[in-house]
Length: 230
Image (cartoon, rainbow, N blue to C red; front, side, top):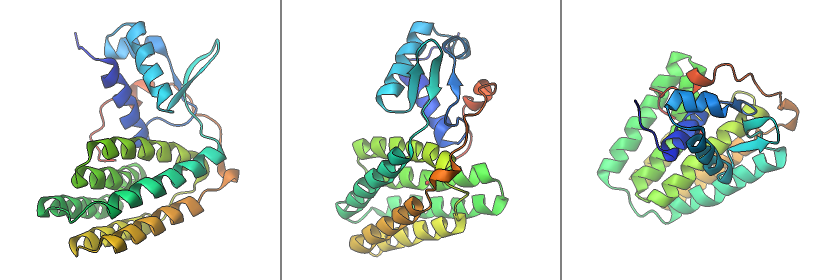
């Protein structure tokens, strides 16, 4: 029998949000999750409470647990938070090691390959994961954890309030940020990141908000993803 901790379950949910396999408004049934992970409902409830504290799920009285549907104001606040954290991260980074730059360039190349496949989900995951990869390469695990949460939050926001973004534009932004870091120009990298996030925020459109999706595919959504993760 598989052994999972509440943190394992919580992180599987977050990774499924990042991979766009779980959507705003989807129901997370306690018993279904307990069966999937072969744990008690008590452990599942503890994992969901952990996610609730991080702002990813909510409990609706007498109904159950659901992936949150951020309000439009919360959507704007998400990008405002990313603007502060991700630009500050670059400002204070110092010059990345060559191994970090190699990893970032490999990721940018993988983005372009993902865009070329024409698979919207693969493309979105690769673009989103750039920000996590950048935080990891800059070496601060606390900032990385924050960027993971903000990236997942942005995924929920974009599902509700953004039409499909210009993937190639985002990819080009990422490539320019990496090359600025390679040149030792952190100020330029910071400016490019600020402009990138501002452009993403400018695409928010309250009129695009739709309805929650069915939870019938919960098991498939929470299977470990083999993809990468804007």
